[in-house]
Image (cartoon, rainbow, N blue to C red; front, side, top):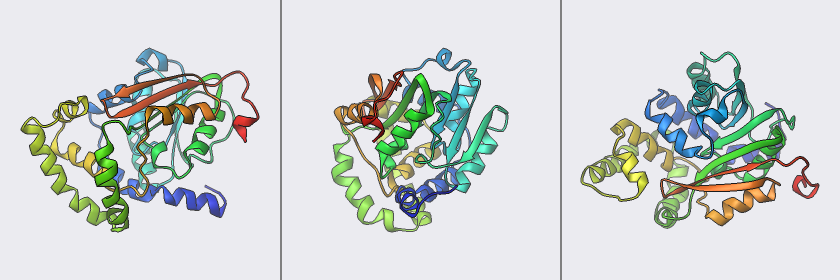
Length: 275
């Protein structure tokens, strides 16, 4: 992977090495991942993937490329920048010969217009320059192709913004990732107990009640580790897609705490959208 010093700094700012630790630690495929994927990509049915080519931006351990291939996708490319994430993704996706796993950042996607669908699950909100990644994803799909992202919502997450985010920014993001992982067991245990006692009426908490403690801890750890984590309102997410020239934009409120957004690349993008 090549890039300028500025671009390299932008990638590091997004802390891919910290997520690489996570995906190396939690590398197994779980059946409940399909339900999560279906919610995150709610705008697309399994039939919508059949025969299509796709680009998975920030593939992590490969869990979100797995399901499109199961649904009959023709093939695709899954990209990430951390060696541990890529190694795990290659293992988890080894049964799909038409799916390539490549070392490439979200800022370095070739503008080849060769994909039917470009998607990014839980990554764009961790980037220093999300609009650049979205523009690259838009250029990667053919005219009429679709771009889909799933990101954290501001709605129902303001307590995270005002309580967890300052702790994460001032302390957790500066600690060695192994220590952060060790610390994650304590809030995970508290959350597990709270869920067993019936805490939380939102759809997200109802979903979490069905997860194992290990899976729950991985989710808590995922919240604790990043250096950048944005929580966006519906209007902000819609504007991000509009700025890169996508049309027919639709948003869905996922689990009452996050946003899944999709748009279509028009036949021609204006020069303003490529500036």
